[in-house]
Length: 262
Image (cartoon, rainbow, N blue to C red; front, side, top):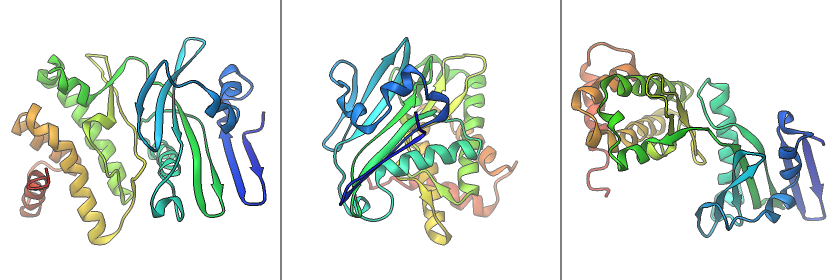
């Protein structure tokens, strides 16, 4: 099986890629083309669905894969630049390049008609025995009250977030639901996922997006973490022991970011 499959017609172009490690296997065969991916049934194990996309689980020989299918695209992004789907797979690859743990890409691609993005799909391998932080918060998991567990997870999130921002990249939706953590109580590992609209910014645009990323993290943080833990996270993120006057202003912007927006 070729890594890249390109199909063209007079107006339509279809590029599909299966990652090399999954070729010549049952996984590679199941996801070998965009047509085969759209033939898969999504009714038995659907995760989410809206007017643009559907996400469902696909079990292959005991291994779980997440299939995200985009049926249509809207707005100017579908005509120019990256579609949401293209943005997501580019950003997952960027996370890996920056040393940020993320979901493993299996296959991806989309159909384009002239300059407009059409249907497409993205397949990732599941992260076994993991849960997103928003789920832990919703069930008031005891680990959120364990200082050592919180410190371990917080340090990883601070490190990953700093790597993104040092690259002038903002996640743009860095909420607890988009952060997975393994169910290891002693050595939990953090993964960043679901980043279709993240991109690089510069100057004041970057500064604003950085504040937004940190505010998204603090949105649930202020409900489930102590002020001391929240402040320690910021210091870890900045790599400092004490706040400067500039840091204090930044912290105020972060904590007030969503005031009047909800």
